[in-house]
Length: 128
Image (cartoon, rainbow, N blue to C red):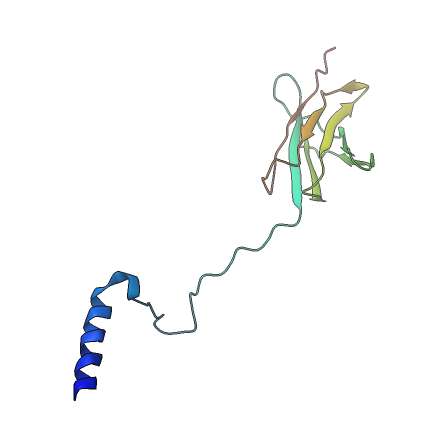
């Protein structure tokens, strides 16, 4: 009888002491929250435009990997849009565009830019 009394007292103390409380999940085996998928690459997109912000079709866009010095090219569509998928997260890239001998400024996509889908627009002064 004394043991039952002590167990009851212990239970009451434990229930009223936040430091001793334990939470048990209700239902399944744990939280149903899924971890977000780990991003392993990124896609660079943008538009090649003129000084009046009009798209420049068929411009050649150059993407240089600053670690390996490899260069990829992309011919922008009729709407001036370009796209480089599957880029490493751990590399800086330099990007610029050319059309009819005119060239945009070079822009950098930094490895510290953590956006999954960065967007860099390139401007060419076609009237030079």
